[in-house]
Image 1 (tube, protein in one colour):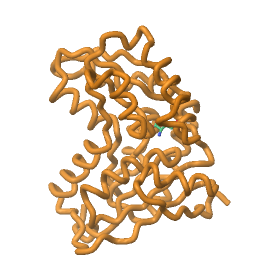
Image 2 (image 1 turned 90 degrees about the vertical axis):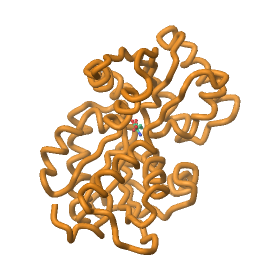
Image 3 (image 1 turned 180 degrees about the vertical axis):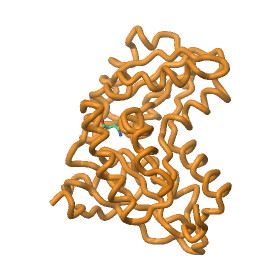
Length: 272
Ligand code: DGL
Protein backbone atom coordinates (compact mmCIF):
# COMPACT_ATOMS: atom_id res chain seq x y z
CA UNK A 1 0.00 0.00 0.00
CA UNK A 2 1.34 3.46 -0.81
CA UNK A 3 2.52 5.70 2.01
CA UNK A 4 0.18 8.62 1.26
CA UNK A 5 -2.43 6.42 2.92
CA UNK A 6 -1.02 7.14 6.39
CA UNK A 7 -3.58 9.79 7.33
CA UNK A 8 -6.54 8.03 5.79
CA UNK A 9 -9.14 6.82 8.30
CA UNK A 10 -9.78 3.44 9.86
CA UNK A 11 -13.22 2.13 8.89
CA UNK A 12 -15.08 0.17 11.57
CA UNK A 13 -18.46 -1.46 11.13
CA UNK A 14 -21.01 -3.48 13.04
CA UNK A 15 -24.69 -4.36 12.80
CA UNK A 16 -25.32 -1.58 15.29
CA UNK A 17 -23.55 0.18 18.09
CA UNK A 18 -22.00 -2.89 19.80
CA UNK A 19 -18.95 -2.45 17.55
CA UNK A 20 -18.29 0.83 19.34
CA UNK A 21 -16.64 -1.33 22.04
CA UNK A 22 -14.01 -2.19 19.42
CA UNK A 23 -13.85 1.41 18.11
CA UNK A 24 -13.29 2.57 21.69
CA UNK A 25 -10.41 0.12 22.18
CA UNK A 26 -8.87 1.38 18.91
CA UNK A 27 -9.26 5.00 20.00
CA UNK A 28 -7.57 4.24 23.34
CA UNK A 29 -4.70 2.37 21.70
CA UNK A 30 -4.27 4.64 18.63
CA UNK A 31 -5.58 8.08 19.67
CA UNK A 32 -4.26 9.87 16.57
CA UNK A 33 -6.03 7.62 14.08
CA UNK A 34 -9.23 8.93 12.54
CA UNK A 35 -12.24 6.61 12.75
CA UNK A 36 -15.15 6.27 10.35
CA UNK A 37 -17.76 4.10 12.03
CA UNK A 38 -20.80 2.55 10.39
CA UNK A 39 -23.58 0.87 12.41
CA UNK A 40 -26.10 -0.99 10.26
CA UNK A 41 -28.94 -0.25 12.67
CA UNK A 42 -31.56 -0.71 9.91
CA UNK A 43 -30.65 -4.42 9.77
CA UNK A 44 -29.86 -5.10 13.42
CA UNK A 45 -29.58 -7.84 14.65
CA UNK A 46 -27.25 -9.65 12.25
CA UNK A 47 -27.20 -12.67 14.55
CA UNK A 48 -30.56 -13.89 13.26
CA UNK A 49 -29.90 -13.16 9.56
CA UNK A 50 -28.74 -15.54 6.84
CA UNK A 51 -25.12 -15.63 5.72
CA UNK A 52 -26.14 -14.29 2.29
CA UNK A 53 -27.96 -11.29 3.78
CA UNK A 54 -25.00 -10.38 6.02
CA UNK A 55 -22.62 -10.70 3.07
CA UNK A 56 -24.76 -8.31 1.00
CA UNK A 57 -24.95 -5.76 3.86
CA UNK A 58 -21.20 -6.02 4.45
CA UNK A 59 -20.34 -5.34 0.80
CA UNK A 60 -22.58 -2.27 0.75
CA UNK A 61 -20.95 -0.95 3.92
CA UNK A 62 -17.45 -1.69 2.57
CA UNK A 63 -18.30 0.50 -0.44
CA UNK A 64 -19.17 3.36 1.91
CA UNK A 65 -15.95 2.93 3.89
CA UNK A 66 -13.89 2.72 0.69
CA UNK A 67 -15.52 5.96 -0.48
CA UNK A 68 -14.01 7.50 2.68
CA UNK A 69 -10.68 6.00 1.48
CA UNK A 70 -10.27 3.95 4.64
CA UNK A 71 -6.83 2.32 4.80
CA UNK A 72 -8.15 -0.50 6.99
CA UNK A 73 -11.65 -1.93 7.43
CA UNK A 74 -12.32 -3.50 10.83
CA UNK A 75 -15.30 -5.86 10.94
CA UNK A 76 -16.30 -5.10 14.54
CA UNK A 77 -19.00 -7.77 14.61
CA UNK A 78 -18.63 -11.50 15.16
CA UNK A 79 -21.69 -12.34 13.07
CA UNK A 80 -20.32 -10.37 10.09
CA UNK A 81 -16.80 -11.70 10.68
CA UNK A 82 -18.09 -15.27 10.55
CA UNK A 83 -20.27 -14.66 7.48
CA UNK A 84 -18.30 -12.20 5.36
CA UNK A 85 -14.59 -11.91 6.28
CA UNK A 86 -13.21 -13.99 3.39
CA UNK A 87 -15.65 -12.42 0.92
CA UNK A 88 -14.81 -8.87 2.03
CA UNK A 89 -11.07 -9.49 1.79
CA UNK A 90 -11.53 -10.67 -1.80
CA UNK A 91 -13.90 -7.80 -2.61
CA UNK A 92 -11.75 -5.03 -1.13
CA UNK A 93 -8.52 -6.48 -2.60
CA UNK A 94 -5.58 -4.11 -2.32
CA UNK A 95 -7.75 -1.04 -1.64
CA UNK A 96 -7.73 -1.63 2.13
CA UNK A 97 -6.60 -4.16 4.69
CA UNK A 98 -9.41 -6.07 6.40
CA UNK A 99 -9.31 -7.13 10.07
CA UNK A 100 -11.99 -9.27 11.68
CA UNK A 101 -12.71 -9.94 15.36
CA UNK A 102 -12.33 -13.73 15.23
CA UNK A 103 -8.69 -14.30 14.20
CA UNK A 104 -7.26 -12.06 16.97
CA UNK A 105 -9.28 -14.04 19.55
CA UNK A 106 -8.09 -17.36 18.10
CA UNK A 107 -4.51 -16.11 18.58
CA UNK A 108 -5.23 -15.25 22.23
CA UNK A 109 -6.49 -18.78 22.82
CA UNK A 110 -3.44 -20.16 21.02
CA UNK A 111 -1.07 -18.17 23.25
CA UNK A 112 -2.74 -18.56 26.60
CA UNK A 113 -5.34 -21.31 26.71
CA UNK A 114 -3.75 -24.54 25.42
CA UNK A 115 -5.26 -27.63 27.11
CA UNK A 116 -8.02 -25.58 28.78
CA UNK A 117 -11.75 -26.20 28.48
CA UNK A 118 -13.07 -23.28 26.46
CA UNK A 119 -16.68 -22.12 26.23
CA UNK A 120 -18.13 -19.55 23.84
CA UNK A 121 -21.29 -17.46 23.76
CA UNK A 122 -22.40 -15.52 20.69
CA UNK A 123 -25.22 -15.01 18.23
CA UNK A 124 -26.93 -17.83 16.36
CA UNK A 125 -25.12 -16.82 13.16
CA UNK A 126 -21.69 -16.91 14.80
CA UNK A 127 -22.29 -20.23 16.55
CA UNK A 128 -23.94 -21.92 13.55
CA UNK A 129 -21.18 -20.77 11.19
CA UNK A 130 -18.69 -23.02 13.03
CA UNK A 131 -15.90 -20.55 12.20
CA UNK A 132 -14.50 -20.38 15.75
CA UNK A 133 -14.74 -24.16 16.08
CA UNK A 134 -12.82 -24.83 12.87
CA UNK A 135 -10.15 -22.16 13.49
CA UNK A 136 -9.57 -23.34 17.07
CA UNK A 137 -9.46 -26.98 15.92
CA UNK A 138 -6.77 -26.03 13.38
CA UNK A 139 -4.38 -24.59 16.00
CA UNK A 140 -1.03 -26.37 16.61
CA UNK A 141 -2.56 -27.54 19.91
CA UNK A 142 -6.16 -28.08 18.74
CA UNK A 143 -8.87 -26.64 20.98
CA UNK A 144 -12.43 -27.94 21.19
CA UNK A 145 -14.85 -25.08 21.85
CA UNK A 146 -18.15 -25.56 23.70
CA UNK A 147 -20.53 -23.11 22.05
CA UNK A 148 -23.89 -21.73 23.09
CA UNK A 149 -26.02 -19.27 21.11
CA UNK A 150 -27.32 -16.58 23.48
CA UNK A 151 -29.43 -14.31 21.24
CA UNK A 152 -31.43 -12.74 24.06
CA UNK A 153 -28.29 -11.12 25.45
CA UNK A 154 -27.99 -8.82 22.43
CA UNK A 155 -31.57 -7.60 22.79
CA UNK A 156 -31.18 -7.28 26.55
CA UNK A 157 -28.09 -5.08 26.16
CA UNK A 158 -29.64 -3.04 23.33
CA UNK A 159 -32.55 -2.33 25.67
CA UNK A 160 -30.20 -1.16 28.39
CA UNK A 161 -30.83 -4.11 30.71
CA UNK A 162 -27.60 -4.86 32.44
CA UNK A 163 -26.45 -4.88 36.02
CA UNK A 164 -30.01 -5.48 37.18
CA UNK A 165 -32.28 -8.35 38.13
CA UNK A 166 -33.36 -9.07 34.56
CA UNK A 167 -29.80 -9.31 33.27
CA UNK A 168 -28.64 -11.46 36.23
CA UNK A 169 -31.51 -13.89 35.59
CA UNK A 170 -30.93 -14.16 31.84
CA UNK A 171 -27.16 -14.51 32.25
CA UNK A 172 -27.68 -17.16 34.94
CA UNK A 173 -30.12 -19.05 32.74
CA UNK A 174 -27.70 -19.17 29.80
CA UNK A 175 -24.44 -19.76 31.66
CA UNK A 176 -25.87 -22.60 33.74
CA UNK A 177 -26.46 -24.52 30.48
CA UNK A 178 -24.87 -27.99 30.49
CA UNK A 179 -22.82 -27.10 27.38
CA UNK A 180 -20.74 -24.63 29.40
CA UNK A 181 -20.23 -26.90 32.39
CA UNK A 182 -16.74 -26.81 34.01
CA UNK A 183 -15.17 -24.44 31.49
CA UNK A 184 -11.87 -22.70 32.34
CA UNK A 185 -12.44 -19.81 29.99
CA UNK A 186 -15.34 -18.18 28.14
CA UNK A 187 -15.00 -16.38 24.81
CA UNK A 188 -17.38 -13.43 24.43
CA UNK A 189 -18.01 -13.89 20.70
CA UNK A 190 -20.17 -10.82 20.31
CA UNK A 191 -19.10 -7.18 20.39
CA UNK A 192 -22.07 -6.29 22.59
CA UNK A 193 -20.92 -8.53 25.42
CA UNK A 194 -18.05 -6.47 26.92
CA UNK A 195 -20.88 -4.48 28.54
CA UNK A 196 -21.82 -7.49 30.66
CA UNK A 197 -18.28 -8.83 31.15
CA UNK A 198 -18.22 -7.87 34.84
CA UNK A 199 -21.57 -9.60 35.45
CA UNK A 200 -20.31 -12.74 33.72
CA UNK A 201 -17.07 -12.70 35.73
CA UNK A 202 -19.13 -12.30 38.90
CA UNK A 203 -21.37 -15.22 37.87
CA UNK A 204 -18.23 -17.40 37.77
CA UNK A 205 -16.87 -15.86 41.00
CA UNK A 206 -13.86 -14.72 38.94
CA UNK A 207 -12.71 -18.34 38.51
CA UNK A 208 -13.24 -18.41 34.73
CA UNK A 209 -11.17 -16.23 32.36
CA UNK A 210 -13.64 -14.15 30.36
CA UNK A 211 -12.15 -13.10 27.01
CA UNK A 212 -13.30 -10.32 24.69
CA UNK A 213 -11.44 -9.40 21.55
CA UNK A 214 -11.69 -5.57 21.53
CA UNK A 215 -8.18 -4.94 22.84
CA UNK A 216 -6.68 -7.75 20.79
CA UNK A 217 -8.21 -6.27 17.64
CA UNK A 218 -6.72 -2.86 18.50
CA UNK A 219 -3.33 -4.49 19.07
CA UNK A 220 -3.51 -6.38 15.81
CA UNK A 221 -4.44 -3.14 14.00
CA UNK A 222 -1.55 -1.28 15.66
CA UNK A 223 0.90 -3.96 14.53
CA UNK A 224 -0.39 -3.89 10.97
CA UNK A 225 -0.15 -0.08 10.75
CA UNK A 226 3.29 0.01 12.27
CA UNK A 227 4.70 -2.82 10.11
CA UNK A 228 3.35 -1.19 6.96
CA UNK A 229 4.36 2.39 7.81
CA UNK A 230 0.73 3.40 7.88
CA UNK A 231 0.52 4.96 11.35
CA UNK A 232 -1.13 8.37 11.24
CA UNK A 233 1.18 11.38 11.46
CA UNK A 234 -1.55 13.50 13.12
CA UNK A 235 -0.26 14.98 16.36
CA UNK A 236 -3.78 15.62 17.72
CA UNK A 237 -6.75 13.25 17.96
CA UNK A 238 -8.73 13.89 14.75
CA UNK A 239 -12.51 14.20 14.46
CA UNK A 240 -14.27 10.91 13.96
CA UNK A 241 -17.36 10.17 11.86
CA UNK A 242 -20.16 7.94 13.15
CA UNK A 243 -22.84 6.85 10.69
CA UNK A 244 -25.87 4.59 10.92
CA UNK A 245 -28.31 3.19 8.36
CA UNK A 246 -31.27 4.07 10.60
CA UNK A 247 -31.19 6.86 13.16
CA UNK A 248 -33.06 6.91 16.43
CA UNK A 249 -32.33 9.12 19.42
CA UNK A 250 -32.10 6.05 21.65
CA UNK A 251 -29.21 4.63 19.58
CA UNK A 252 -27.42 7.93 20.08
CA UNK A 253 -28.01 7.91 23.84
CA UNK A 254 -26.75 4.31 24.04
CA UNK A 255 -23.44 5.18 22.36
CA UNK A 256 -22.21 6.41 25.75
CA UNK A 257 -22.41 2.88 27.12
CA UNK A 258 -20.41 1.43 24.27
CA UNK A 259 -17.93 4.22 23.47
CA UNK A 260 -17.59 5.87 26.88
CA UNK A 261 -19.02 9.16 25.61
CA UNK A 262 -22.09 10.16 23.61
CA UNK A 263 -21.25 10.44 19.92
CA UNK A 264 -23.25 12.19 17.25
CA UNK A 265 -24.75 9.70 14.81
CA UNK A 266 -25.68 10.70 11.28
CA UNK A 267 -27.82 8.70 8.92
CA UNK A 268 -25.98 7.78 5.73
CA UNK A 269 -27.79 9.11 2.60
CA UNK A 270 -27.60 5.73 0.80
CA UNK A 271 -30.12 4.41 3.30
CA UNK A 272 -32.57 7.34 2.95
N1 DGL B 1 -22.41 -7.13 17.37
C1 DGL B 1 -22.91 -8.39 16.83
C2 DGL B 1 -21.86 -9.49 16.93
O1 DGL B 1 -20.74 -9.27 17.38
C3 DGL B 1 -24.14 -8.88 17.54
C4 DGL B 1 -25.38 -8.15 17.33
C5 DGL B 1 -26.23 -8.66 16.20
O2 DGL B 1 -26.73 -9.79 16.25
O3 DGL B 1 -26.38 -7.89 15.27
O4 DGL B 1 -22.14 -10.59 16.55
